[in-house]
Image (cartoon, rainbow, N blue to C red):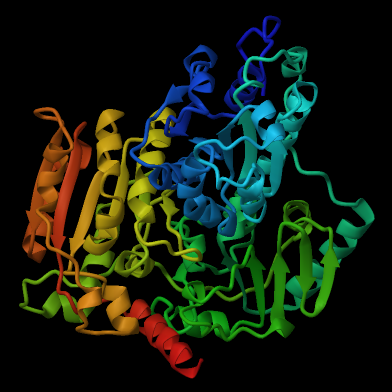
Length: 569
């Protein structure tokens, strides 16, 4: 990627770092100021970057996660010790779910580190590497910029590894290194971000094996999961799905990876929690092309997958597995491209026909209460192409399985890490990335309990003139926890808030927000046909009232499995 910023005057590591971030697509930097990063922050605007200014480091980390899922990579700036540790949970989640964040930490001077000085924000033991050691466990690269002669090389390596591995990296920036001199000429050469090609002979062999079983199959299916998204294989996946016509399904973490308007798209497969008719279709197939699978508990509805490895071909970022034969070092992208090129005509059976139908029993019910079974299919009829949809761990994460997306919808959730409160922070970052890309709508669904953990991030949305549509599901507490254990226990309750009053409390300007409270199906329908609600240039905030004891069927099954495991341990 060529930079439009002149490089001949570059002399400082921080200049170099920020310009490299600009080159790879970062336009906004999340984080908080602290005395060890203040001088570094002076260079943001000079290098064409926007400072977001979050309310705390945890939220900033969540926001950087959401931004990266939309833009492809993000940056987070914290201060040494107290700041970076507050972001540990968010960075761990990004590591777990393959999200590329460049985490920049302002450090004390190299002299202070060498002398083991008793400084604030330390543990008081002279160990200045203790925090970097923590982050080394949840980062794919750790670059300590203690020597200006190595700084440019270490920065390039960190950003390259972040992109290629799709995981966080950690960069320390001591205050006395910020304004040292480094070679700026390297910036004239764009970073090489392309993945290394597979060894041709090995790749061709694997392709031939895949094609052999594919042509023998009578009712194969494609199952797409999260790592197809994270490891940048969606172009190849789309080509395979469209060219082959094979019935295609997604796992929960793969929601949004496939164009759900295609005639061969069939829905979400998650074992016993699958969409209607999907489990039978997938589990009766004679060959499963599993692309980027992450077989975690919530992603499989409590490990209820029933797919034999003997009829599965696994595509991954670092290996291929055909039935029980594994081929290390063969990346899925190249294999998928050649399979599409050589596939020819297949003799396959058709799959389920997708729809956005609300269950018949819900349509016939005279009950006005908004139920989970009614709402999520109804949502699919309101969504628009290219929407960004964020769902929180809990009822929303499971309910969205029943929502059929229009084309090009981006779905963001944290199914594996599952940190409660993630979605609101992530929404801020995703909405900012959407604004930079010209995408009109970012839509958040979060529970009232989850929202209370990170509600302050609405303040950052207002500060940055972001206008997401926020639905807070008001169902009196932690419903997902109730289903696992403690049905009526007080530890699963939360203090009721006047949620729609919060934008004003966070300083919203007059006319900057519109708030709603919907309690019936009719009110939801009226909201969904309201043109101002659908296309407003204001932040829209909705209290969506649902019964405290209602949940999607998939959540009930997963929670039951989790409760059973807990009782056995």
